[in-house]
Length: 193
Image 1: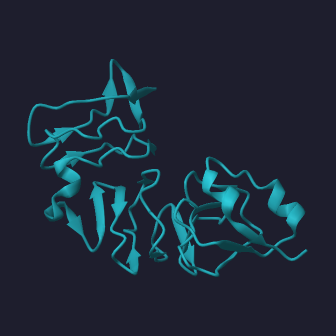
Image 2 (image 1 turned 180 degrees about the horizontal axis):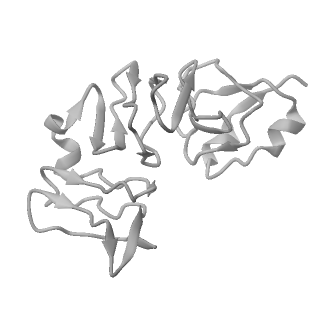
């Protein structure tokens, strides 16, 4: 597999290749494209990409150009790059394949519909289809995290409230894979016991 660690295209449009030297491009590492002032217009990310790191598109003209945003969301193809925190509620596209790390912030409720391929939602939280991975917990929410969750995606509590509510016991809470969620250290966790 190939990973994009840095890239500086020479023009308005930039397409990340589907493969490099015969290997599929599957990831764009943290900040690989951040600060790239040449990234102005369109950006094409192939569907082979399954991971987009944090802070990839900040400080680019692609990110700051609101013509690239639609309904409070910045997409590149089937990849959700960012959500505008000024929106109180957004509905991700059914065909969304990948959500960039840290793209969701914490201030909005995320909704999906039944046709969404990879995600489901409840009470503003965003999960994988079977609700075992939690991708987003909205800021200021008192939504209860279900006991089906076995893993938290990285950075989901970075902008969260002062507390989270978990439907299970404290022992069950401890068993969850917390990922890279340093913000969780400062949050009160309310459980059954």
